[in-house]
Image (cartoon, rainbow, N blue to C red; front, side, top):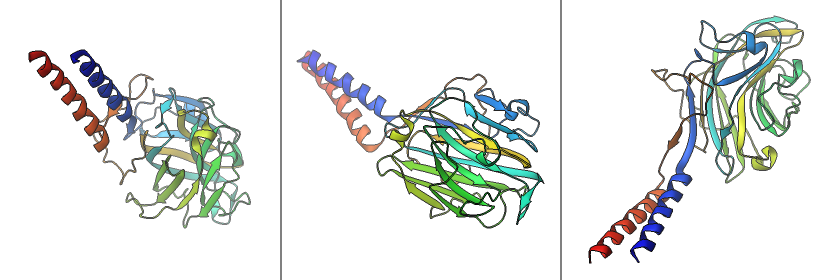
Length: 295
C-alpha cells in the first residue's frame, strides 16, 4: 500500500512539473548576441556599441534567429513583446517619403536562416511559419506604405493588414505585442508608439498554428530586407514566453544579461491553480504513505 501511494505521489509531482514548465527569454538589450544565428547583412552588424539587434543598415537582407529552437506550449501558444526602431531611410520611397522595406517577427520551423530581400522583407520563402510584418513601403498591398500585417508560410501577401498612422521609419522607438492563444486559435497583434499595451488588438486572425508549424519547437527571431530603398532596422528589446501570457508593457531595462553562450533559455516553472492542487495531492500521498508505515 505504501509503495503504491509513493509511486502515485511521485508520478503526480512529475506530471505537475512537466505541465507547468514554460520557456522564457528576456533581452532588455543586445550587448551580447551569442544566443543568435546571424544571417546575411545582420552577421556583420552585431554586436555593436548601441547594444541593439541591427538587422541591416541602409541596404541588404538579414535575419537573427535564436540558434536553438524555442519550446512553445503544446498548443503552440506564446506571447511576445518587443521594441524596434527604423532610422535613416534612404533610396526610393513612396508617398510618405524615402526608405523601405521594414521588418518581420517570425516563428518558423525550417532553419535559423533568412528568406528573401526587398519586398520580401527577409521573410519571403520561409515555409512552415507565421510572421508579423511592419512594412514601410507601398508594394500595392492593402494598408499602403506604412502597415502591419500577419503573414503565413513565407508569403508577404498578408492574411490581414492595417494601415498605421505615421511612419515606422521615423527614427522613433515603436512597440509591438504578439499573442497566440492555442486554445482559441486567436492570433493578436498590437502596435503603438508608446510602451503602454493597447486594450484592443490592432489586427487579429484565427490560425491553427500547430498545423502551420508542424512542431512546437520553433526558431524564433526577426528578419529584414531592402531593395532600392533602405534604412537601418533595429530591435531594441525583446521578451518571449512559451505560453499565452500577454505582457502588460515594456520591461524596464535592468541587470538582466543576455546568454553568454548559444544555449537554450532557462526554463522557468510556474504553478497554476490546477497544478497547485496536483502538487498538494501528491504531497498528501507521500504523507499518507509514511503514516501508513508508522502504523
